[in-house]
Image (cartoon, rainbow, N blue to C red):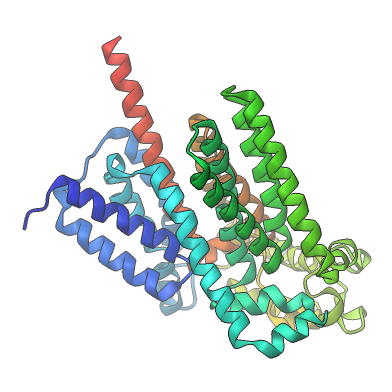
Amino acid sequence: MTISEKNFDSIFNLFLLLIGAGIIFRIPCTWLLLVFAAFNLFFLKKMKTIKKANGLRLLIALPLLLELLFFFNTDSYYNEVKILEKYAALPVFAWFIIGNYHRVHFYKLLTSYAYLTLLIVLFYWFLFIGTNPILIAKYQSGIDLWEMGYVFSQSMGLHAPALNMHMAFVTVIFLYLILQSFQKHRGLKNHIFRISGFVISFFMVLFINTRMALVNVFLGMLIVFFYALKEQVNVKKTIKVSLISIIISVVVLIVFVKNNNYMTYKYQVVTFAYMDKVGKLDEIKNPEAKIFNSMVTRLSIWKSAWELSLQNLPFGTGASQSKTDLIAYYKQTNQQFLAKYEFPTHNQFLDYFLKYGFLGPIVVLIYLLGIAYLGLDLKQPVVLFFFVSFFTSNCIDDFLIRFDGIVFSSFWFAVFGSYWLQQKAIADKVQQVL
């Protein structure tokens, strides 16, 4: 069977778009990955191999290689195989996306991904409103507003921080696209679509209401504005668009907070409540209502994970039994609240430290710094924001143990790496001409 280069390129990039937007749905995304791998295996000769790609492939595959290295440090090979399944996407992206780096339409993919992801989430949001009138009436009355974003995320089969990490990324992409649109005079229709995308996606970040995603959106704004000004392309227009974007964001934030009084309470009171009770959460009456999502709970988890990690050096507990051992440690240290809800580590560095010993957090750091390097070398604010967002998110959660986190990071790592290879190829040609 033969296929033209043009058709292959189109199908390849369509796969990238569908996988990127479909990451939030595990089963459909898994099937897409299988078909994508089969498609590329069938047309294996279409790939292009260069030396610079090998280092990127190694970096993308690092979490999988770490798991394989410690595969035999387990009490259940069945569970280890189940864990390995989550990392199966890494070699697929490392081999096939990087192998077809010259075909990746980076900016077109970013734009299409942002629109498609927003449309999918909006569809589920309207479905949620239409099928849950009692819940919506309760929220409109100001009752149990703390659960609103979490219940909506669960209706999509997702964890709220994971969904909001995606939405924060989409929001910053739209902000970047707005600046590009005005700088390149794309026209009124283009401006309206991109501004609307930014406003709606930012609203969804607020609706889902997870703290790290909101903080990251504002960090993303700073990164995008900084690089836009640094490029010194129409500085006056860049400043004007930046100020308009900030004003729009503040207005949306004020309107949302005014209609959601729990948000002020959450950020001012709940987040840092009972900080003197680290490791002693059972002394708090009704901890479910008072500190379930508070910083003191995270710190108590981290304290236990750190202590247990130190007891299992140098090679850790192994991946398959780390959570079981952590829950057992909660019980051993008489922390019944943590044991009841079986909290995982909620920190990727500590999670890998517990599982793999000294090597664990080093691998996480190298993996994440690989993305940072691409962003800095490319001087690309969206890539750099992705690093900041995924790094900070993994400081308070553990996304490299989740399918959506693993696929989300490795997919975009491979896409960013492909764009980096394209730019290096262009630079090499210029150098040869000179």
